[in-house]
Image 1 (tube, rainbow, N blue to C red):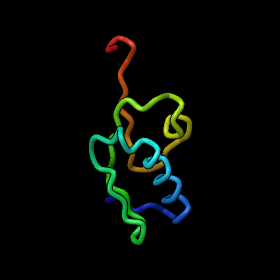
Image 2 (cartoon, helix red, strand yellow):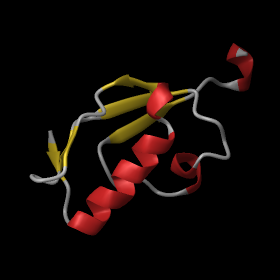
Image 3 (cartoon, rainbow, N blue to C red):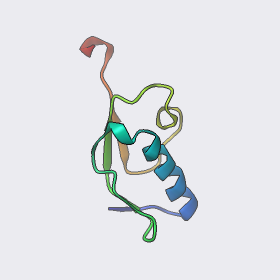
Image 4 (cartoon, one colour):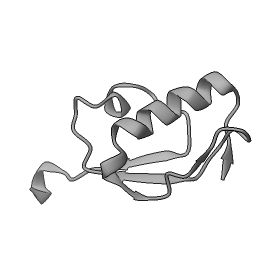
Length: 70
């Protein structure tokens, strides 16, 4: 689990993950009391999702398909 720098940053990352919870393929566990989030991989998130619009600065990796893969 990765330690997140502040409660505000934890809340922001948790909100990003909550929006794409159905796209999590690995990780995603959160411990708000300890400010920790497991390294997380999300797959094929829509471009309009917040996680695709903001810089993440946390243990979250988006894996998407290239145009050649579709």
